Image (cartoon, rainbow over all chains, first blue to last red; front, side, top):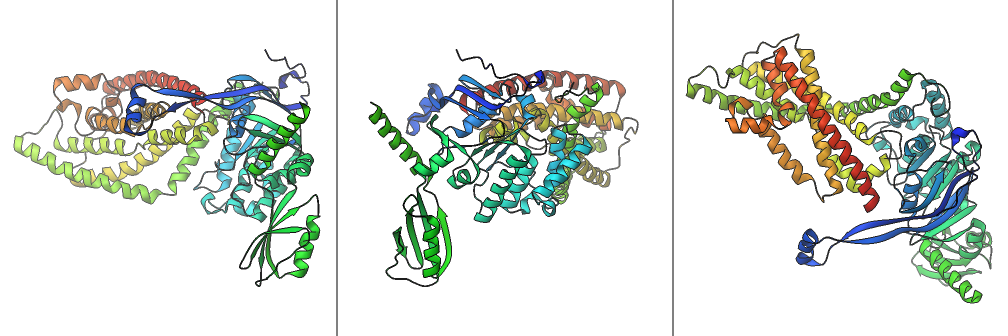
Length: 350
Length: 279
């Protein structure tokens, strides 16, 4: 049995709900059909189908306050999308409880859908052959907005997202960054209290990524929209969120502040340089040369030992830098380190 | 009361709830109007097939030295065939789209919006069929009128024929939707659609009016909903009678009722399946 959520009530009760999301012991098990190798396996699968249970999400618990911006990260297959699907009412959990804005998502999916928004980086809600203006009009009707309300809201979002010039261009002719701006604006038309962003910056270049990050920040600051963000890009998390929840193999392995994540797990930065001339005996104080080939140099910097700004300053002042790219360690590396640290801690405790 | 606690009149709520589907249909129409030339090119097939069947039927009527074949004159037979072909060519392969939505997981993403997935698909299907029927119908009428003399069509009956066509596309929608939803349990529904399409050609009365068939086949066709999709409306065009219109409409409504329940059941079970197998 799970505890009764005493601090909750349905929105119709008129009581202010402080928590946007509350999850307690949530789990999801899928059944997958198995097939043996070769022709015999295929024939066997027809007459004697075998199923295997896969635990996609395993007993997770967390809370998200109203107006909070939370990063929910993990590698592929970690259970991020399954969790979002349960929180948006698409999937029923196998066990546990979740409430979103006081509603049980899978039971009250229709009502909840008026209060939440979602953007899936790899799934577009815009009609591909038509301009975004048409999809906006359709979404206005789908979310049952009054005509005047829809117009003023659309105009406000068009200004905020600077998409006025894109509204009459067929979606297929927009760049990925432009399309994503339109996607996010479209998902805000009905003033959702919570927005689920699944990989909103995937495939975007540096400039477009920064624009999307600015817009997400605006959405949280100005509209007090609660943001539940999943991303592979640790840069998104560092720039936008104060809190991070890391999930792997369906289990939450870290629920902490982003500053803790940065301090403990994002200490290493990789700098990719492109130089104007070939440099022999490349040397930069505080940075370790990982690879040098032709005009390219790859450096590793420990930010707890030297300030990244100083390293970059040294590079720009002493070398003919044409291009520079600073990146965080890949998420897999961060997760491995979290596991290592958790292991160390448990040894220490025991 | 609406979701924001404001009093909303019943008819306003009804308009808000159902108006979204007409908007979906309108948008889909806009989407397809961008490719109107593609539709016209597709209609070329209609021109070819009508011409071929005209030659075949001329030979049949001449060799038998008869005025009527199963109660149809040659012009009536050709107009029947043209209209039956128009109906079939105007129905997009919906089951393939649903199959894709289920397999690629797009259906899951449609579930977190305040609309019914089935009704959304119906709105897009209906609007596309309407546009295709108009284009194919115009081309088909032109070809048939040039090939043989025009048949006397009941002008008063035309609006009722339009109702029959609307009900016909609804039956076709239910059947194609049901086939598409089988993707929850089957690896590929294309084979089912392939067989269904061929059965529709024969027992739906696309290739020949059902009166031409022997008694056994006619009885099989009578027991299926397919004749309400093609044969019924096509026969109405050339031989409009109020009694046959009413008989057709009654049969169509009964089949729609039964098939809608089948689709609702399959959809509900399918969404449960989604829960078991994942999005």
